Length: 463
Image (cartoon, rainbow, N blue to C red; front, side):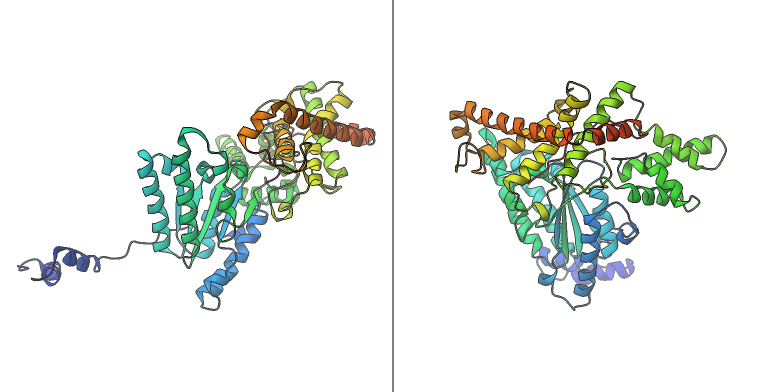
């Protein structure tokens, strides 16, 4: 039977024996097949990176425990950092962190997204795809499993209407799969989201994605370090720090793009890259704004900055980031048990920009309320949560989260939310009037800054 087929023929003859079922023959042959090669992971390591903040600390602590587990000196149950939910706006490094983590641990990265699952035909296809991804990760452990856009699963508290049963099945399966995955030795799960408030609370409970880390744009020192990584060692750090100072609110991805553009212009001009090339590119990174717009935006940011300092949310010498007011209380361990005061302080910071506009310019603009993602929308959401869900509002010790209950008393709810917002802006106005000279000086300094940009849409400020 195997004559003329060499070793391959003898393999076939050995494994297709008389008396064996077809399934047994196939299984026997599969055992001979080489194992699927491990997917190559990024050679870059977390310890060489900058700008990841709390996520970097979390990843390096995991790497230490992971090595002890690999040596048999620590059981998997004793490894604390087995899962993390990375939350923040686009381009803050959530997905690249997962690749770097896999490279640091020396394990494959398995990447998927909720959008990929939902692209399947019918509910059965979505559920099947979810199981396939998690089964692959559990079979290939040790590995890192990245699930991007995890907010697409939604929260059962937000599901209503004709698709309730559809989405409830998806959420329930997700909870089941994550629980199973967390029991698989060597499997580390990273969830990524732009909207942490849309995550089902059960998904972030102990034993699932029980670490939540806010990914912030890097500070000036980290921006300088990121620039150094992309332009090489030829430039002094103090010069790169000057360029980095022009890039408030920019992410690592933004800085990489800037460095690439500066190199390209220098290359086309037939010369080497200079610090002037980087400064010119940084100056144009935010576009040019007319003087009136710069004055108004300077006032807006200065107001939020001074209110945040006055309430102890930012240190006295803290940099005024482009996203100030969006993150006065990040969703981290420090805000795990926010009080009414915590919420009120956050609302006051969010309203500080409007208060400053009224003081310095005489009338507010729609900067605070330009979109559904605006500071006013974020402040209103916090006030509404206090008034309807916390038992701390004018309605008293009651949770009005039920849509039917909210429909019964819409007018009183709107009134109590409005009054809380008005109290907050009055509070912010009082703080700024007491610091009028500092407000004017800070607003003018921000308006003169080379990196001035419009305030960007807010991150959620609390759980």
